[in-house]
Amino acid sequence: MIKTKPTGPIPSGYQALDGELAIGGRKASELVAENGSPLFVYSSGRLDARMRQLRAAMPDALDLHYAMKANPFQPLLRHMVDLADGIDIASGGEMRMALAAGAAPEHISFAGPGKRDEELEQAIAAGVTINIESPSECERALKIGAVLDRKPRLAIRVNPDFDLKGSGMKMGGGAKPFGMDIDLVAPTVKRILDAGADWRGFHIFAGSQALSADAIIETQAQTLELAGRLATMIGQAPDHVNLGGGFGIPYFPGDEQLDIAKVGKALGKQLEHLPDILSSTRFAIELGRYLVGEAGVYLTRIVDRKESQGQTFLVTDGGLHHQLAASGNFGTVVRRNYPAAIANRFEEEPSETVSIVGCLCTPLDRLSDNAAMPKAGVGDIVAIFCAGAYGATASPATFLGQGPARELLVD
Image 1 (cartoon, rainbow, N blue to C red):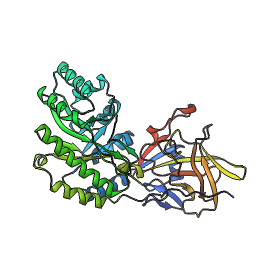
Image 2 (tube, rainbow, N blue to C red):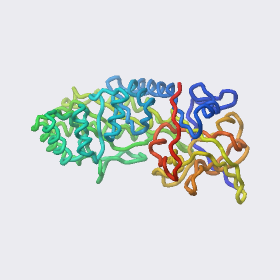
Image 3 (cartoon, one colour):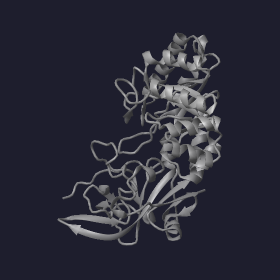
Image 4 (cartoon, rainbow, N blue to C red):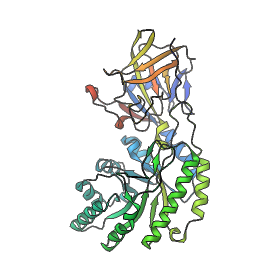
């Protein structure tokens, strides 16, 4: 007998229309019929609601940035430019997309440990803030600024001496390719100031995908303490401090929503008791998947139903080349099931245990493993939830010549 494995929790708020999953008021079957399959569908209404919830929970003085690496789909990005206070990028390509989406250069910050000279030149020419990751990158930026006769806007990305406990990806603490160790920060800021460049402040990012409010609260307190310590060492207040992000979303069985009200209340108290040197500093957090992850659904049509050794497989026209993370091949150690459903049978009760696989010729291409689903067959539509972040652009779309999925922003 095949043992059924649980799936992750479907994000709250998704409802049925005539028995089908509805996204932005549209039935999944209609969306696929009009736009083809496989298809990523993003809901602007859910993006708006998430930002409203976040602003209500966070201190009024805190800026909210969108880390566009989570999802750079141009219609979605234009929407996020209007919602967020800033856009955080990680490449020259993202900079061009952000500018094309209407982001003001002074509201864009550029992080990443391997910036090319041409990327630095483009950022300096545009007036984008560069988060400097090493003393040598600082020297390159200053040299390019001198050649362009432009004053570079430079912040320091700090490798903190702590990490975000329970985070899916640790971005600080220990030896890291990201940012500068603490002892390099003050001398590099002095170099920036002596060169007459515009020192913007600090970017301190300790980790991502954390669901523990207590862990995030502890890390934010450590980050504020570190920012005050560094400012004191430098003898000058930073204009701006990016506290990083780390807010996670539930993907897997047993995951629970992050308590953002608790995080916001604690951060508000922390900002009320800053050291004097940070009294005029502006603070921000940067979030990617927390803002857009639950707003996206991946729809893929079943093209075959087959039995093998007593197991049932639903074979779709999509797969890991669009949803690498859902297949378990994007940083997870033990494969667990993302939230999934048969979209056009959304209100039906599960009646069988099936594995949902993609169309690729590899055993890695598995979207759901021995999951309880309503009976489905050829022509039915599978929905994979939490597909709004690190889906289309974080997956190998051209693997085996398959090509990208379509993307669509709906209400």
